[in-house]
Image (cartoon, rainbow, N blue to C red; front, side, top):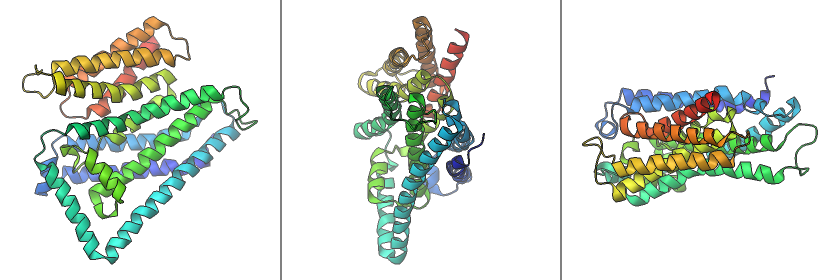
Length: 355
């Protein structure tokens, strides 16, 4: 049964997919020297895939709560509450950003100051070969949030199990509650953060002060004229909401911790580069693949609600570690934050299907 209360968020995902695709076309046909300085041949393809993922989220949204044991009444209730939260926060964010727009329109001097601020930050990144250790840490903290939210909601739902906290007669159980928390938080983060990204790239003057500080303290050089990978890590999780919980949790943490381990150990201990001339190091490969293996082993066991045999979990961990290694070695164009979660989740589902 189709639920009307799912339409607003579905349309928002479609809209952001369209706006992201529009920006990718601007990148593809860019002739501005400053823009060309910060992008490369793969930027268009990465942005195009990000746009496609936003559209896919819109297509999946009307079916998310139908995977639970909730009744039609319960599903309608979940969609209504999710939509109210997402639209409410979104409206507040929209008003704040448009307030800055009219403020700058009324005061041209302030607009010039904001544009000068943007120019200074771009100039600061112009000669940067690699991001600083401080920037890298801020990025990794942001990347851990999706997995932390999923794990928290799953553990919270276990704590609520058996208590009379769910809406009577709707069939909303602990699994429904956990899914509600995960997708609601993920969705408003995605939509609000992508809105901020679009403003940063196309209407900088509208950004509030805190958003500007966050963006320019965590962006890499190649993200100055393109989207950051923060939304990518979240949007790639949506297809796995329909799979086992252990896969969703493992994908979320592998995407963040494996990359962080590879980057941190590669910077500190990496001496031998592979392939030759690559910025990647053998130490980074070892750290990333080892971390991926341990994450799937630990979280795959912790959230093993379907009683999957331990040998299958070990096989999943080995398969994910191999995927992370191959992506790290051979990917030179597409974002690894896009490929790692999609391929890691796919290979886990394949292992579960054939084991």
